[in-house]
Structures are given as C-alpha cells and as structure tokens.
Length: 241
Image 1 (cartoon, rainbow, N blue to C red):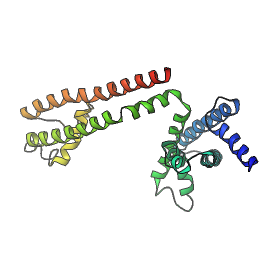
Image 2 (spheres, one colour):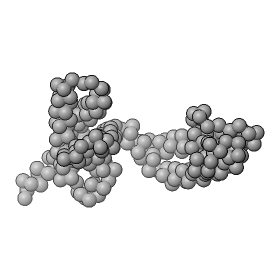
Image 3 (tube, one colour):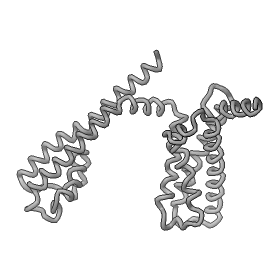
Image 4 (tube, rainbow, N blue to C red):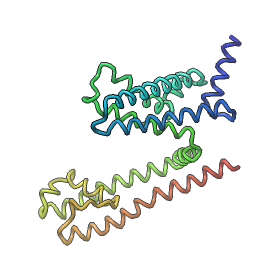
C-alpha cells in the first residue's frame, strides 16, 4: 500500500504542473506533441500527398494518440476527485483530443468528417501549460455574470434589429428579407460590423435604421473587450497579492 501511494505521488509530481525538472520536461514534451499533431493535422489536408507521406503522418498521429491516451489515464489515476477531473474543462479537452481516433475504428471518416475536426481541440490542451491563458480563463470565470448578461442583451438586440429591418425591407427586397429568420443573417453581420455586402437595405427607412444598428454594433464589439480587460487586471492583481 505504501509503495502504491509513493508511486502515485511520483506520477502526480510529473503529470501535474509542479516546480521540478521532471514536471517541466513532461510539460514541454506534451506541448511538443500537441504542436506536432496540429501540424500533421494541417498537412493531411494538402491534396495529392504521396502514399508514403500519408503513412508517415498516420504513424505520427498514432504515436501522439497513444501518448495522449496514457497522459489522460494517468491524470485520472492521480486525480484526488476523479469524477470532478473527468467532467472538468481540461478533462473534457483531454478526452476530445483522443476521441476521434478511437471513434474512427470501423467507421469511414469520410462520412463523419466532423469527428476529424475534433482533433483541433488538442490546441486547447496548450492552455494548461500557458500562464497567460490561465489568466485569461480565470478572467472569464471572474466576469462570467457580466458576459452572460452581455450575451443576453446582444441576442435581444439581434432579434430586435432583425424584426426592424424585416418591416423596412420586406416589400422592397422579398428575396433577401422574406421573413424575420432570413433577416437574422443581416442582423448578425451588421451588429458585429462585419457587413459582407451581400445583403443591404435599399429603402430610406432601412438605411436610417441600419445606421443606428451600426452605432450599436460598435458598442457591442467594444463592451466585451472592456469586461475581459478589467477581469484580466483583477486576475493578475490577485496573483500579485
């Protein structure tokens, strides 16, 4: 029993971020594998790759998945509260990083391309090892109520602008604003100030309404930046205390 406890403690000192050489080497190694897997994921999309190149990429993917799986199981093994870790942010990300590989057995991924997209979640594994990203995640937690309130107000404004532009433009452009649901596309790209230009108002009332929506859109873009910046400052100040 004592041997088991010592072994678990040694593994925990390695896989969890601690101020020792073995932990630092392990974190660097995992970060390298994450970046390597992201590169291979991107290279796989290049058309007309040679079969030999694809075989190499698949071998790298296999090695990365095996190591990520071992890492995931070890983190569960050393976790003080296993269910809490499994359903935590990092626990879910660690699972999503390896899930597509195991789901691909016996399944043609050409018909389930979304599963391959899940491999992109490996990028989020880097958050665990990045101090700046840790501050950002803490800032999101500190400002979650303000962010949720902002999102709620934004959804109301999007719907309001969709209804408004529908009544101004429906008769003039029934092909673009045939319903409030069709008008939501215009509403989203206008309030986010993207404005692709494929759908735009042609009536005087619609253009005046759009002007006010654009002014509101500028505020919508700026508000979350201020909320998160304030929360980041608080997070950094807490660490310094």
